[in-house]
Length: 468
Ligand SMILES: *Cc1c(COP(=O)(O)O)cnc(C)c1O
Image (tube, rainbow, N blue to C red; front, side, top):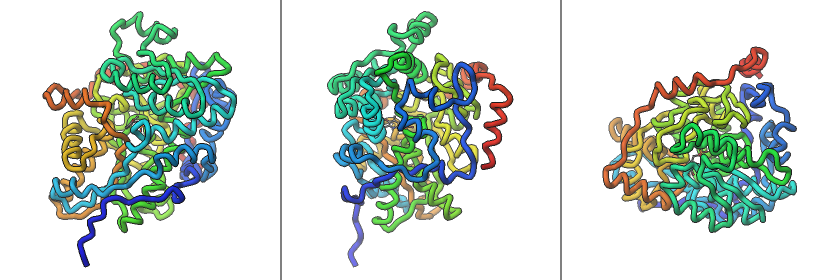
């Protein structure tokens, strides 16, 4: 028999998942409810109605196991899905490892990342409810580009508040967003009270996702024809990303392999949740399964150094309050190049999975992450987004452990996007200009002092979430 050299495991369009998987149906505990930012009491659907269409609010709290993907959404997803699963044979060779390394490549979407999977669904439901404009924040610009394309497809206007450091570091992401017809403002901006408040205190503020979220929420909430759209963190966003893991399960079967590790980089939790949660379903059923590893930057270590507590989702304290691992809503991380990973909080769903030991987390500094990115580019040929390179770094480390121990583990990671708009970051790395930021514990401690004080009866509700 000749040696198997298969690299790509491809599904046909007919094999695309037609439903999203909602893990809330299978969790052995209940999720703590989100709270109203003003009253700190549990939110009702009506409280969210100024920001989101009812269909997404229902998905947010749904416990239905499978939710059908609307035909109009499938029709758009079909233009790049199913995405390929690739065996990283050249990387394995470069590492001289007995490990089998696979990656699911989400860079094939029009925006170049997994973000399009939810952008299309969100634009669709908003359009269906008669909304005419969406506002949003963007860090590195991937979410802004994904949403602007989706808005163009469904005939919606789009306003993007882009974190100022990325606006300056990544002018071409801004051009892309504008090419798709959206308007883009550097955040903090003078268009909102939240932005002006930050600028009054710190005219040179480099911005943060928390600040940009405040601006986008403030822009949308009072206007009946305008909604807000979030690219990560929320349950419905993670739900939309489960197509990644559903496809990967089928593709690993095609490969005749099964992962010991499933890895995703972690900003708000959507691409990690997207690849890991369908595997978690199998783990919850079988009682055993792959280790699910979320990888975050040491400069913004919400999962590994944050506190599990109720906190505001944004900096100004006008977005809903969620129970999550947080560095404090006032935390402004250093201007690392993985802009999409600079969020002070974490998805409440992934936070709960971490609390209950169903997933694990690790953190890396950016220089070793870029070393792994370049090693990957020079072997596999794809230049990864700096965010995605965090997942590569974890995969490379595990594969090196396999070389040391002689164990042939199977490693699957999500390559959440390509880095074609991140060449300024690669320039800095190649010129030796990148610095590693130690996690600033004193800054975290200061920011954690501002956590909202939750009424005891509400806190008891959250604690009761341990039983079902
Ligand atoms: C936005 C982004 C991330 C981080 O967001 P998650 O919600 O944690 O997935 C990671 N990788 C890429 C390429 C992104 O665009």
